[in-house]
Amino acid sequence: MADEQLLEGAVPPAANRHLFGHEQAEHYLAEAYRSGKGHHAILLEGAEGIGKATLAFRFANHVLHFPHPPDAPEKLIVPDHTSTITRQVIAGASHDLMHLKRPVDAKSGRLRTAITVEEVRRAGHFLTQTSGTGNWRIVVVDAADDLNRNAANAILKILEEPPKNAMFLLISHAPGRLLPTIRSRCLPLALRPLGPHDLSAALSALGIDTGGEDAGKLADLAGGSVSEALKLINYGGGEIIEAYHETLAGGDAEARAIMHRLADTLAKRDNETVLAFLLGHIDEDIKARAREAAMSGAIARAERLAVLSSEIGKDVATADAFNLDQKQLVLDLLSRVRAAVN
Image (cartoon, rainbow, N blue to C red; front, side):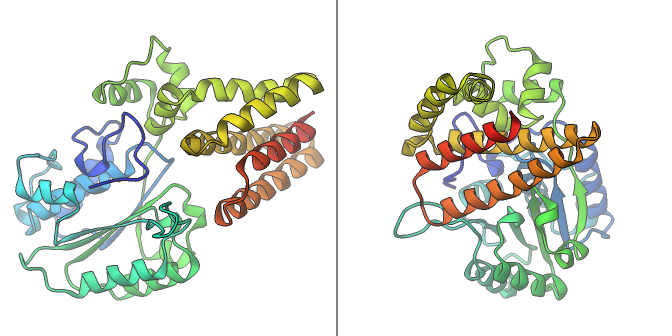
């Protein structure tokens, strides 16, 4: 199954045999399903890149192997790549599982900015068809945060009256962005970022050389996220973060020179992953500074930073939607952040 968003060094979630740090969630899903009292819609919440999609596909694979709940084992099975069912799930060829995600635009070849209502309608049609194997019909929504308004309303209707033997596994990096009515119809299962030991184990399972990086420091920089750690290690994310903070601390001439070097580098088409990494870091940095200001009693500064964070989020979404010049976007954002924090 091709994944346009797969990072260098990563394994597609459906094919990943390794899952670290979420033993309690695995145990809960296995026990709830085996008891026959599992929920028809489960919302896996947590930071991006911590294993939510891997857990979703692992659970889906488990259910498809054991369609009669009382026959299921007490623990989720590890995907067996020699199994026909598992191979079909990995290849995206299963007649009983649908991976609902942002589609690729036929004209540009790029991922669209949202999951559209047409995609949800396809999922609805998929769920109404009778399984040839008599198995469950499972839809993995990855990520539910990407549903546009019409798509969200369409999926809500399905959640309100789900077909028999239908199951939704919704993945959310930012649950607050979901419609409250969608959340209310799902069973939330929150996953925490990985600690240093689990993150190191996950990277080791991928064959990633951390270059002797301190496990605690790497986990802190990556926010307990495997995907963020891969960006730090394989995409030069560490150097990008260092350059960003140099633009905030340096003199005007030095800062401008660094800004232009960063913008030139990040505006290249093959650097879209690193650009997204920087934008995410900027957002987290501004929010952290806003929290720090609020805690110290500098309410006016906290409010300015909070407004800036919201404005930047809107500007980034607009630039993405209309394919605006990325170099100018980076220069503008860096200038505004520098002015706000100094």
